Amino acid sequence: MDFKAYVADKLAGLTGLTRDALAGALETPPEQKLGDLAFPCFVLAKTLRKAPPAIAKELAEQFGTDAYIARAEAVGGYLNFFFDRTAFTKDVVQAIRTAGGDYGRSDIGKGKTVLVEFSSPNIAKPFHIGHLFSTAVGNSLEHIYNYLGYTTVKINHLGDWGTQFGKLISAYKRWGDKAVIEQDPINELLKIYVKFHEEAEKDPALEEEARDYFKKLEDGDPETTALWQYFRDVSLLEFNRVYDRLGVSFDSYAGESFYSDKMQEVVDILSEKQLLTDSDGAKVVRLDELNIPPCIILKSDGATIYATRDIAAALYRKRTYDFYKNIYVVGTPQALHFKQIFAVIEKAGFSWAKDCVHVGFGLVKFPDKKLSTRHGDVVFLEDVLNESVQKTLEIITNNNPDLEQKEEVAEKVGIGAVLYTFLKNSREKDIVFSWDNMLDFEGESAPYVQYTYARGRSILRKADMDYSGADFSKATSDDEYALIAQLAAFGDAVVDAAEKNEPFYVNRYVTNLARCFNKFYNNYPILRSDVDTETKKARLAIVDVTTQVIQSALGLLGIQTVESM
Ligand code: ARG
Image (cartoon, rainbow, N blue to C red; front, top):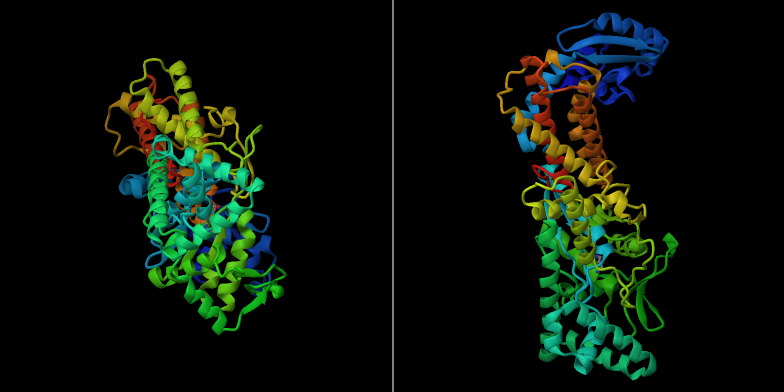
């Protein structure tokens, strides 16, 4: 049952306002002691020509109490409603048990398609920590939209085209050794790419050579194309290894190269709309009215660039998927780039430009390492994952030496810890990587939440009894009720996360849920012999549905649960 709708209905009868208007006006009070819902009576002050506190008092008397609402109380200009705890608990527990893993789902997105572009690493370059940030946020956003009934499409806009491939081909021709590359493809390709830059500083002719190779690639020359294909294949093999570990998959790998033959259309549209102007031989779209630099469409040598490929990609996506939203999960340093391409699309007369959204995120700081792919001193993502799993293994071996399948548990918890770190705060905030925080089993971390889940599951296993048909009048303390209220709030957290494109709403939600659970668990014995059977059943049922919701919420973050740890 929808308690909010119930209150709105009853209030509608008393005030003459519509049910919808009332549902919109009803708020969730900031503290439990102020009730479950609050109606701000100033909404009625004008029509009734009375002071809000007087209205609140009158309505409180008229509202009275019933089987669902234990109390309606006037506090200042507010009318606060207290649900009947037994009725509400019963209702929430039942709803979760019925829906199972679908609790909190909705169909508000039905019939609408949301594209989520994320990860998008560059071929022959390491998959670095910024790409991991994008992967964590994008994967979670996709799950969140999906949960709300949207049709979702996961796109990996691979960086597999551009003048850098001319450089790489030139480097490969000079210093490449296939046998060595086969051993450790991305590192080796990176090595020769770095060497190219060093050598080109001494001998500028190399740059010329690289430009020629890229031209050949653009013209479809078979030998250079085969090399490029090889670089792409070995890179994807490595990327997929990481995606498998993270439990991430894509519907499309249409990256930059996919649009290499779809760029003429962009140039044609822009020139037909007379948006292209010359600038030192290059063709650009001026964006003076927005006070931002022009968007370069064609370089002076006629080559297209990153931005042109993105405009071609947006046109293609609209045509192919007719999206409701086209989301790009890319670091905030590229904010200007997206502003430019969205502005160009808008100027070209496409009203759906407003449905393109750049979802940015901050930088990842390692207390003593810098992140850059040019100079070789990058932090490799796989090293981060391995280290996290290794450290987790040490901790759980220490805490629980007899645990079975330790390696498997450490993999899920260690990876979960990394993902959680990226989803912990508002995404635009920079992250300082700290193993101590990430793996703090008592702090704000994935292990803390995963441990809470495992704890709950362990009680259920130990209890080994049927707790259906529990009497929830046995579980109405403040701590129990706070947990129930938190369980009921799951759906709202998912909606908030989608509205702001901020998975951290779900992250914060599940962390708070774990906190509420632990408070309940620490204060109320469940299996102790002095607890009567009815109370035991009620508490077990609450444990059961809590573990269910923790699992669903972590699932939306791409984090797995373990049965023991
Ligand atoms: N490959 C780019 C990079 O690593 C990110 C691509 C972002 N997506 C886009 N549509 N431009 O920086």
